[in-house]
Image 1 (tube, rainbow, N blue to C red):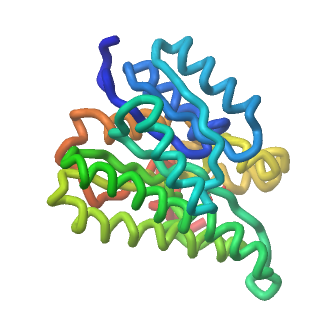
Image 2: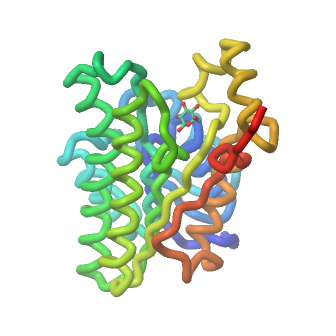
Image 3: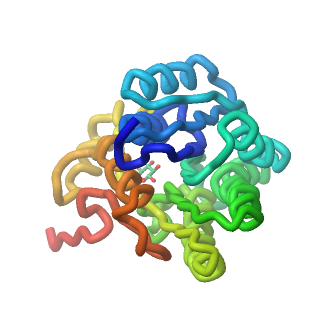
Length: 257
Ligand code: BGC
């Protein structure tokens, strides 16, 4: 199959829904074989795989909870065992929990940090070790958030995880550059995906948010997938150590009234 990712294999974590699903389908439409990672919901993962195949690519499913170290290793092992290679890793799986700082529980702290940061950390490690051993190039794309940089009151665990992801990306761009492995973040703003379902159902909350977005609309997961494709393709070959904001201008917003 031809396409900008022809012959490549990409792992996309949390690709049963939302941004991860769109990235998997977009990559498949450009000739990639995608490894659809899911934690619980096999039906959603199967939907992603069918859509990826309908888009012209191939897909396999792997059940992996990225917060569990052995699962991250297995995810990479499965790509090699079933597909013989793995060129692109998209660390997309993420969760958020709302709580005032003084109410954050240890369980919620661990849940958010373990999925969003520890998961990306050790999955990236497993991905890189294989490439290092085989002396092959690679691409790492982290789906962080505008909140890798911007405050989000009542979501301190989420901000800590995404801020950590920002520094992980910057550090790895230096450590992995000599291996010809690039690493970049995509920082989505308010995207209409399941993570935002509750907020979008609340009209006054949604209207208040839209006032802060210069482009005046929520983003779509396809908006994010387009940038992921650029970073994964040959066009992104010389880009490493950067964050791409896909937020309709949210992070640059300024109003006097
Ligand atoms: C969060 C959303 C939030 C958006 C903009 C995203 O990273 O997941 O809950 O609406 O940032 O603040």
